[in-house]
Length: 76
Image (cartoon, rainbow, N blue to C red):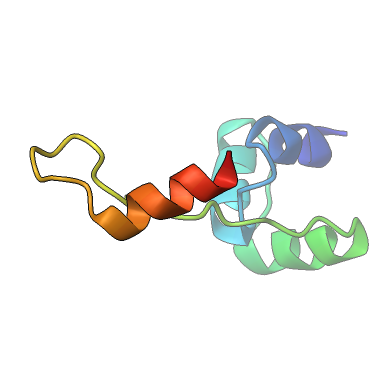
């Protein structure tokens, strides 16, 4: 079915607005609310990709703290 194929091709990230736009491009007559109700019937729930967050900067010229050195020595 075209609905699930387009949804799966988007890696399950398209919501009703984006999916209805893609369906219109494919030649289907589907508005956002119709798309939303069909998505509910087919149990198509989008998962929204998480934003990439930098957690640390390993490429710095600062010295490593002694506490970090002790922790890494205890791990081995």
